[in-house]
Every structure is written in C-alpha cells, then in structure tokens.
Image (cartoon, rainbow, N blue to C red):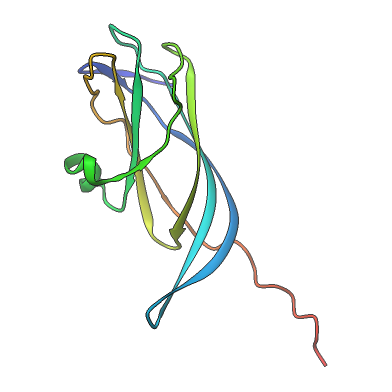
Length: 141
C-alpha cells in the first residue's frame, strides 16, 4: 500500500468486499426500480499523524463532485467507535440497499482529538449489478 502525506493525515486506499444478499423490486409510483441489499466490508489503514485518530467520517454519493464539494450532504456510513492504532487496518461493515445499475462513490476522512479533519481519501467507485438469475420454472406442463 502506498501512502502520500496530505495535510494532517495520509491518503489511503479503500479496499472493498461485496456480497450481494438479495435482489428485489421497489415500486416508486408507476416506475419499478430494482435494488440490491448488500453487505459491504470497507478496509483502510489508520493514517499517520501527530495525534491518534479519534474518529472517521465515511460517506458515499452518486457523484465525485458531491464528495469533493458537498461532503456534509453525502450519506454517512457508520464506522468503528474507536479507531485502531496508527498503521493498523480498520474496517466498517455495513448493509446498504441501493438501486441497481447506478454508480456510487465512497470516501473517508479522519479526525484527530482536536477536531481537525484530514483531506478526503482516494475515492472508490462501484456499480451494483444484478447477479442473481431468475428462479427456475418448476411447473412447466
């Protein structure tokens, strides 16, 4: 893993493990939108700084611009209550229900005990696709 010094913290790569749990349909007025409920595990290295990391803000949005310019408006994902030690691997496991075939962007920031926020991490993107085939027909006559 390569790290680059940025302001208070370090840039760090996010790794993601994705498991599709369920594909379903959601009705919105007269339009059907398929969605997937997914269990995601995000991992990152605790950044190096003058102080220990006190907390994280981990967010996602539908555009990179939102993460870069409207951070507080992006969806917050819960992270560990107590971050690990500098250089350790931290992770967040979350269940998200998101529409299929839409690209999402994820990023994280670290906060020190004084409340100083790091620069944004690298931005990870993913598009959820339907990977479950239809059920087999069992009553062919």
